[in-house]
Length: 504
RNA sequence: GCCCUCGUAGCUCAGUGGAUAGAGCAUUUGCUUGCGGAGCAAAGGGCCGUGUGUUCGAAUCACACCGAGGGCGCCA
Image: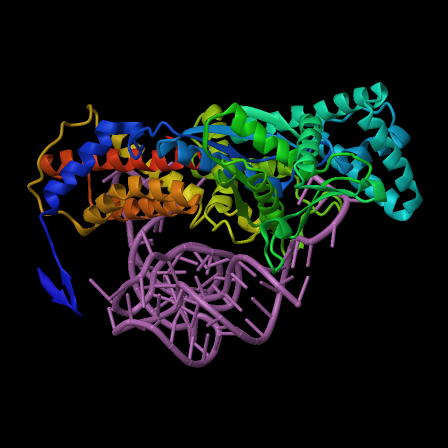
């Protein structure tokens, strides 16, 4: 015990505590850090890609963030329902169909499906920008869709499927899973019914007779003097559905289908006002669960120079190209570092490292911070990045592989612990708390931070403390410590949806 | 005009009201007859945007200002 600068530092026997931590990790194994089941259901809606558009790096953030949050919240003891809400109808789809029917009729997508679909979409926008009179044709097509013109519906179904097939491929590569798929096309009719109800209850004002839309004056309904929630347009003047129309129905649908403690929407920050408006409107309409719907805003992914990625303008980095590039780069490095691996192992390592390197920066940044994508840092596998953490896992595995026996039983410590041992144990012991914190704050950042620190403290320990060549009693404890560190790293990486390879 | 977010090392970012504000990259220099060097160690580099408060104590909380980005009735 000592006093330093007004602080009272207490030192206690870390030996007993250390044994307890390590024993606990090894007893619980892959469940180390998992919290007791609460019996409460949480829905995490994420990814939400639009069909008929390219899937680019910007979409990766919601997909990765949502997947990881779902894993973390589940590990924190909740029953998680992963939802994906496909944007398969709306002005963008109609524009695409218009362009396709008029200029590309009969064409089928090439191998590079999303690029082609994205190109057709930006081409549609270019044509419309050049000749605004064509907008009339697009509006006409929208009303034909609205009347379910069989020809339009058939074309829509076929082309929509091209996108969906591609999404499924991407999710498989990224190891992302969904329990429930929604699409906004299926919310159009229910949404319109919700709006009818709002009009009847006097919550929404129908201005269609004077050529206006159907709106909800939220601030007025709440009696607010200053503008805050403003006005939400819930139906177009031509009675076609808007995103807002559909979101009302979706929220209601979620809570009637599931008994949700919380319904989380992982959607980018630009839609913050929209969600506040939708949730507030539902609250005004008397849905008591409305406050349990929560928008989790995250900032966008930009290109260097703060260039926004927009399918419309074609300023995008396609996900597929990036994944391929990252893996082949990783492959090249494996060849260099570890040529003795089998072809199959090299492929596995390249996948683990390449994908990990892409996912990590999306998860390691605060949700409110913009991610700037550039090729150089995306393909940099050194330093504060997933491969560093994976490498620590590999090193631990390497020691355990060489111990030529099964892991020793728990032993009391009778040697003086090295400072690096204490630090490693301390970091391992913090994992369960960080899981709880990450789940509560919806921040994957806490897990990436801890994973990095685990790797760092393990590497310190690795350098400082011989394990296999240590005295027998010390050796037994250190082997168990190595196994515990490896297990904790693996558990943390699993929550981040990053593979923990055995070799690399 | 109203609302939201961000501002910490040259760059990218951590930092739960508490000790001398920390990592990575980049720069410079060391470490392998040790369990894998995708590693480790060291050096330089900071009016924590500015100011005023609250507090025993502020990068952290409040307010104002400056700078950057985003949103705001028929896009999603």
